[in-house]
Image 1 (cartoon, rainbow, N blue to C red):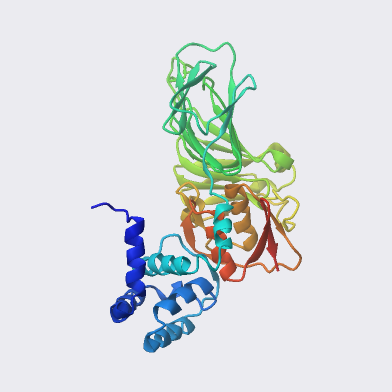
Image 2 (cartoon, one colour):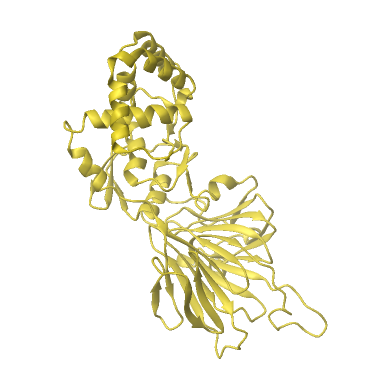
Length: 424
């Protein structure tokens, strides 16, 4: 049997659901399904779900009263986000119930089709590679194969990941490439030393096409996750006769506005969040050890004891002061590095794992993520109430699917093209 239902089978299912002679069986079935759904799923102000449930239980007053009692008995203090995945019982109710609801109201509300048609799709894999000579290659739709030869390395694209394969030939001069992800794009690459890097939306990584010196230096804007490969001086041909030493990997971050820093590692896994419109630059360590050091410009503004820290796994280094127009002035802008001992690793790594994690995030923090992932502009009208969110969902939902959940829980908005206006 096929896993997909034909149009005739769907219509037959709807007719079966609407058949009066089957009401009792449906009521019993849905009562069992509802009992298995966590009560936090229901909210009295969710008009669509309430309409579907009311239609399902319209002939069973006892079931309707029981459901209303359940909703009122479980108030929710913080704004929950509708998850894309819903428990099995809720899936039955929504897929069948909402499908029937839309089917029976298709002629009454033809405008609903236009809303779906104009929906903004989520971000996807894609990037722009800027070669050493300034030429640009859009990677979104390229197939597997060699893209270019750069400074002693072949640049290869394989299964959606960029990789550098050293040719073994000495380069005349060091060549630098830059990987950039616009809003609505993310990408990954493997550097010539085997280090793997994942770039979030609106980010960039500048790096040499061959690592041949006593250190490996790259520069990041936006957000990136690194899995740094260990490398010795003997491997790159710089080791002395007396032995070999590890070649450090150094990431320059946040060079804008004098708020920068450097992260020095030997072989480790860590995440860097250095967006210009965020309140701080955050380096979060998952494995190994890193040294975070303020840039020379920033060191002149801070006390000596806060200029460099060594992180252990699970810790996060925060450098305040990367504040731009629209953010509240940061009172810690002249302080050094603040260390968070018990960092939220799941929240930090959510983007790489294909998720939004809005636990404890404010409205403004949430909207910054939405701006980058859906390639839109978010503006706020006066007197917009800040809200705290809680919840996770996958990043492959459309913008309307995401925002519908916000609207049901008190977040009001309107669109003007690709501009999302948050209303009071």
